[in-house]
Image 1 (spheres, rainbow, N blue to C red):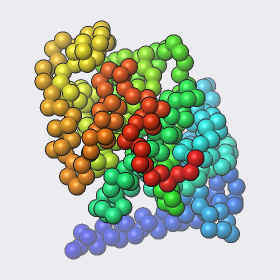
Image 2 (cartoon, one colour; image 1 turned 180 degrees about the vertical axis):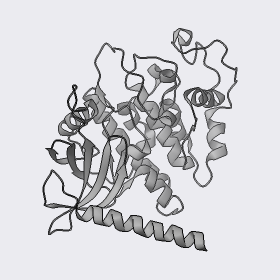
Image 3 (cartoon, rainbow, N blue to C red; image 1 turned 135 degrees about the vertical axis):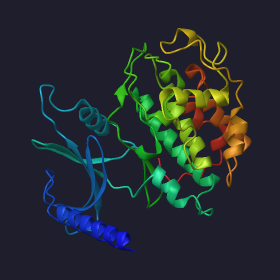
Image 4 (cartoon, helix red, strand yellow; image 1 turned 90 degrees about the vertical axis):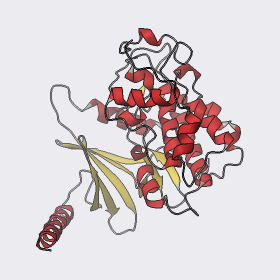
Length: 333
């Protein structure tokens, strides 16, 4: 009882300090924005929910640390700004305004109440809302957004539920967080391997391949598709090798049929354990409790998670898949 009282007192003090901090918050974007809530804090900066003074309109203000050194503005910030300014699409988060000062770069973005992770956690028990119709709607919008990026030769490279925002008014999906995105070209050139959150990282990247293309985004979309059904991440490794092994336990240890040329990949090890693989269908059947993938959904899912990146379905092909014939999309194009 004493401990809980102390904890409550500490939390109240922390909440009060945060309120005081928010009330005095001044944005480089201007005094017309009033800080309401701190939505998140990370390595690169902080995101606030802000209200436009004198209205009931809310925005998300992303403050990126502007650590001016010999290299100038961080490349992640420049990439994000360039892509957001260029990519005007219903399924890409809209940038309203941008401001700079000596310490921060501020992006004023449209406000979305949920990210996909929060939406899954909040609504997963509401079967009237969270159902196969909802999943199909989310997947269609996700593919439309990523297809728009790919058609402009942009790889997102960090697709995960936390980077997919959802507007509550019509359940419109918005792609966000483009700090790791980049433009790609044909022929494919070597790119950095230090991208993508581990649980959504394609197997060829964990084997050290640097000449990747749209296949790495498709793998991430496949992982998100599976997560929408089982309501938790598909493969939850605690290291790259553990993540790779978890994938192999489902698909079998890679061979020339599943991943041609895999022995030449930089991180291939001939001592990898041998797994026959339990099969993707069995793996999903064991984990899908309240929701089941029908044959059409599974066919698309399987095409997204082809081990060979060349065999993975493209966004455009996926949007034309029979699975989406009866989609009830809440986003107007």
